[in-house]
Image (tube, rainbow, N blue to C red):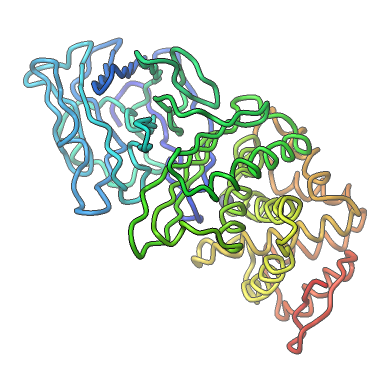
Amino acid sequence: MPGGSWMRRSSIFRFALIAFCLSVPAKSESPDMPQVRIEVTRRGDDWQAAFVFDRDFTTWVLPRSALTAEGGQPWRAPSWNVETRGVRLQRRGSYDVLVADRGKLPRRVDVSFTPVPDRLQADYSPALTFTDGSVALFVAQFDGFPMDSLSAVGKLPSDLNNQMVPAAALEYLFRDSAGPVLLDGRRVAVAETADSNTYVLFGGTRPIETPDMIGILDPQLPPWIKESLTRSVPALLGRYTQELGRLREFKPALMVSWGGPTPGLVSRGGSVLRGLIAMQYEGSGVLEESVAQRQQGLWFIAHEAAHFWLGQTVAYEYARDAWITEGGADLLAVRAVAELDPEYDPKIELNRAIADCIKLTKRHGVAAARDRGEHRAYYACGAVFGLVAEAGSGRSFYKFLRPLIDDNRADGVVTRAEWLAAFDTATRKPMLRRDIERLLDKGVSDPVDFIANLLAQAGVSFEVDPSGIPRLR
Ligand SMILES: [Zn+2]
């Protein structure tokens, strides 16, 4: 392996789980690590990015180089224009690369660009555009690392997850000549961050703002969507903040854009990033309110917003422990939506979780579900374990989670052992813990009876359907 400092790119894409649920570990830095500053400026329709290097590099690799979802083309070539003489943007293997015509790159490379709102294959859109001209840029589109030769770039695998790549400490800086920009939920004249897994918003869309959240809703969204989100999302984030504690690193943000009333289309997409939920609605099918649409939209936001605490404030230790964050976010979402929308019946989602957990634990443990492609097990069984924690402790799920989050803010991780210890403390019934461990590690031969017994021992109130499957009353 070549010299210099290297770092493991850890799970920049955890797309395996539904809806881009991410948790990004902190980067470690060594003293000799190259320092690179990326300054992005908007002046009217003119967008500029400057890459400022603290030393000489042969190439600067841009790892977020996924192809467009439609057409399968690199997205930078048509939209980025390198203005620094003697420097070109090239494609090598799976990556766009900045490279000098000869020798090393200059210490500063200027690029003018047009924001690209296209969907990409398995990555976030480089830009989200709003109908009033506001634009959110995906910060990580400017990520990069140096390599010594173009041929080495060509040999990089298409998936950099868990690959060792040369390390560089990146610092991003954003400014707009027209006014403040919005980053990490705060509007500032110049936004600075070292954390690229989020969007930064340029533009004047008037936000909905409370002490607990900030929301940017496209002014042309169908009125019922605007009305529903304006009413529910501040209440949701207020509730989570009250119960789970104030977030310290960012103020939660929601950005919702509108793709227009495309005939015959019903579309709601979204993803969660660091401190931010980004959503898009599109289609004639979402112009009129329906109870299902309203509840699904809110449930989506409630699940993703739960990850600001369970996932971003505290993450799991290993992917096999995703039941802690995914099942936890599912149960939090069910509880929160039921509080906000009196027409919502929480039993439907919870009974689905019970039935799915039964299906997915027959002679198979939940922990290894990802090896079988059964990611649903983390959501379904994690929610069931949450139900058991609630009933077994006689307290709300919020109250169960709060000490787990508070006690682990410092290292940012809730391990399986920590979750189970908190569960023991809350329920004081060791057999419940043993049953959960059994489901995690091995599964059981008769999950219908086993899970019915687990719920009964915890004091969950249910009846059974003709096949013996528990149904919440
Ligand atoms: Zn999730």
